[in-house]
Amino acid sequence: MNVVALQLSTLPMSKAKLDYYLNICKKRDVSLVLLGEYNLNSFFKELESMPKLMIKKQSTHKINILKELAKEYNLIIVAPIIIFKKDKMYKTIARFTPKTTHFQNQQYLINYKHWNEEKFFDNEISNEYSPMIFTINGMKIAAMNGFELHFDNIWLEILKKKVDLVLLPTVSTFGSEQRWSELIKARAFLNGAFILRANRIGEYTDKEISWKFYGESYLVYPNGEIHNILGSKEEMLIAQIDKSISKDVKRDWGFGAQITKREKL
Image 1 (cartoon, rainbow, N blue to C red):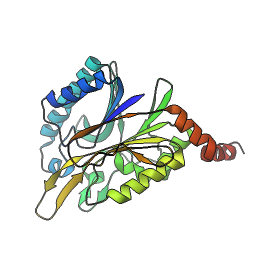
Image 2 (cartoon, helix red, strand yellow):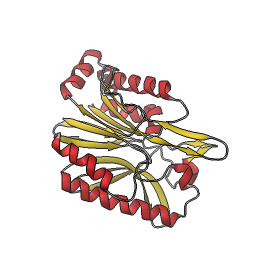
Image 3 (cartoon, helix red, strand yellow):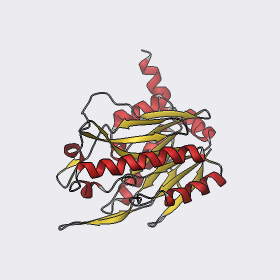
Image 4 (cartoon, helix red, strand yellow):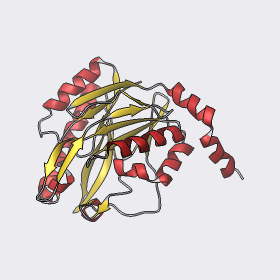
């Protein structure tokens, strides 16, 4: 199965750029496209000073575009986006298909002093953890927002459900390239799964600090090796996912089988 990670900054309201890339996807027989965090919406620090009505207008417009493009190009598109329910604002990951649209709230949100999504959004804190999981042509796929990479209980669900490919949109910055690559490689190996990362690019500067989003989107194989790494500019990554590779790694290392044994006790 051919998949694509688009490495972008915040997209304009026009659909022209997405239209350009998705047309390439159609010619390359791509089944699934992943966008990074804050590609459909402005970056978080910009949202903090935007009126809610403007954020809602931005999201509604982009949702309508993605619905239209998924149908036009017969693609599945996965991307983080902010949605509204009544007066509440939720950070979600969305899956657009030619026929349906599904949103799932992010379950862990950054809550640091300089970057507090947990305080800004209305996502509820819960003791239930389940990533978005769906199937394409017999391949089991999971999607999560970047910060959720750090939490073991989400990955335990991925291991138990024998996921083949994890989609990981991120908004990584502050020179964290090595830390993220080591974490992602370890998660891929321990779960016997491909991980497709789409990281944001661009820069945001406030009075105190510059937030540089460095790109480096890539595909990690189930053995923990990085393939198809991009640079720091706007690019698209086209990769092929082979379920048999994931299946072989799961069988050879047997980490999931150890969990299954203990659940049967």
